[in-house]
Image 1 (cartoon, helix red, strand yellow):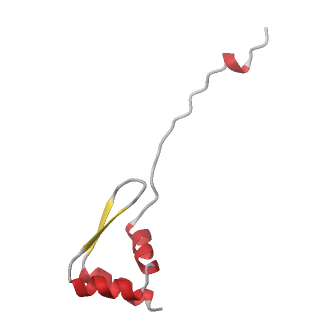
Image 2 (spheres, helix red, strand yellow):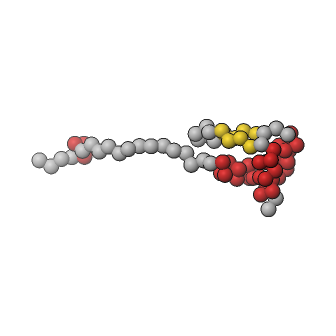
Image 3 (cartoon, one colour):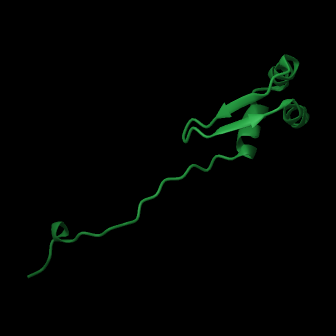
Length: 74
């Protein structure tokens, strides 16, 4: 007797991962523009950015923001 699709059960390993990274988040900060980055620097407080998909937190201090500002000005 031929088997039908309902008779066949395959298992496929499932996994989920987020491809966020500090570098990708830094690029997102660049995209908000130099003016806003300068304002963050003037506030003199580190910032935390969370990935909307996996909720991983990335922290950027003032020196990090200054480096990001250099990229944003290019």
